[in-house]
Length: 281
Image 1 (cartoon, rainbow, N blue to C red):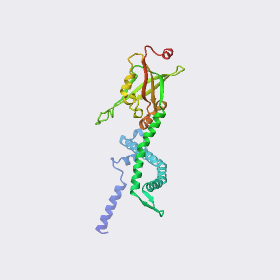
Image 2: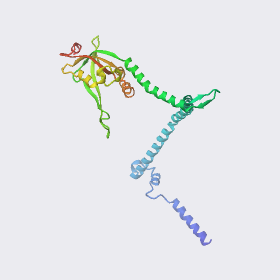
Image 3: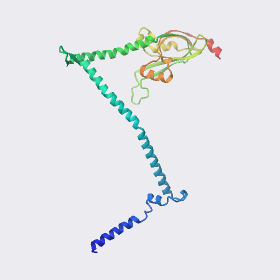
């Protein structure tokens, strides 16, 4: 055996000795393997901590894998819906474009007509502008009614919103956007007392009523100077008071369906509580 072969054999023997040697003291994985048969109370703290960390990592990985796999049906549903919807939307868009900007000639062939497309876009813009106004008029006039015998207690009228974005950082707090709220009670013919709420805001659909154009002055008419409140008759519009709370919130946010007082017909100061309240007490 020459010197080269002897050196290679010694190096291989050294490497085999390192592989067969026990792990060093700092090798927590090796220590955990060696001491896994010991009782839990006798294991070193570092080994117990390493074991707990390894179990926690395994649990987190299993949970993430399960959650990631559980999303597959949802993703597949979105993908199928997109594959079904996107071609139809493209087809609808092409159909609308063909209808808006193409014209048929004498031979029955269609050709691009830019002026026809521009004219149709102007018509569409006018329609989108006018239709909300017409639907708003239908809504407000369709829900317009008179509320009689509404008891408004003292301090039952207050400003609901004083400014636009009152607490937004860096926002301009002017101009004023006053919306007054009226919290009252309606006395039914059978004597039942039903809480009711109104808002007073500008409403240009009722331009012929002064109270609809000046909500601040309408609120001043209901501001009672008597400790017993006022008894009023209102003309109001909207379905706000007929909706459940959370439906009412979104309806006000997106559709502006507040029950708005558009005309304060009559209000009288009371010198005593209404009879229905006295009987209830």
